[in-house]
Image 1: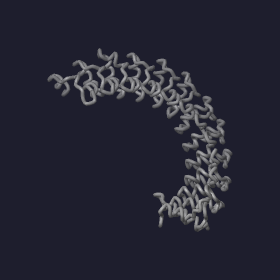
Image 2: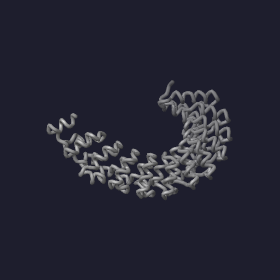
Image 3: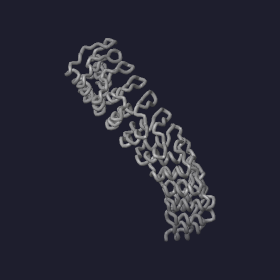
Image 4: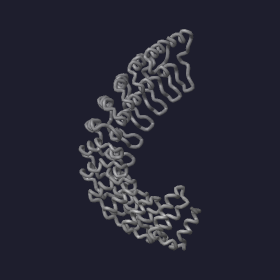
Length: 405
């Protein structure tokens, strides 16, 4: 072959490219070429500028034949333990990509499952994060620690919760993984699984005894997370396991506030069906209706109104949901609130009406949306000359925004 011809004519097996790679690095997917280069003195322990040996590349690609060839070389013994610039070993690579045969071979060759990279992540973290059950089993049989934590406090169980199978969770739990371990955010594996929307994993963790009411650093329970992320399928699982439908996170936010803030009308419906308090107040006095109105989520507003949400409640600034809707740019939301009986002349912060708020936003890049709201409010009888606490009329606001059309 060409490689043999080049070597016969004096080709240097130690030549480096711009990244410090030798021909052996380049050949890591070709067993016959690897054997040829090794027979001409190529060194497995040669490192690139990123600290990777050819063994890293072979482990990443999963070529068991290449690994056998490299490990038979006299220069390979140290390479099994060699870390790159990120302190990652070939075992990290093989575990990340789920190459079970390679992992088995590396462990037999002396690779250490206890080695952590710069993020304090061990090979078991990588295998669990990527859902490689067969690799996890090999590492556990080799004595890997299920309670090791990375630099953010995540255990392999946290990683498995991101998307691994329930079988993987069961394997880790039976090997001593901590169900209630928290990371630096106060998240337990159940929080992680809930955030990712992994229903099977959430079910498995709950069956194993995970606490559905557990609060993370900012007071968020798994139910808050499911409501924020829109995972409606998790609602019955969490509620049936004792989740508090009116539990308060930081600033007294309930799951219903999160659902309203993020526009999840199906979540809002599920929570209200479980008797969530429709007019729960945050520390700023805002109800879920304020949150949905503020961001123009008409579908959520409709759900809340159907369940009797109070249109007249004001937040700490004195604003009712209609004032927030006027700022949102959603004429549909404004129309819903007016249709439900919102007071068009109600005064908000500094004595401003909904017409003041919508006129103020006429200078916004989406001014057409606010023009629709202004027109709607005028059509419904809003006072064009209403005066705020500063003496401003809606015309002052529109003029200040520089809008003429």
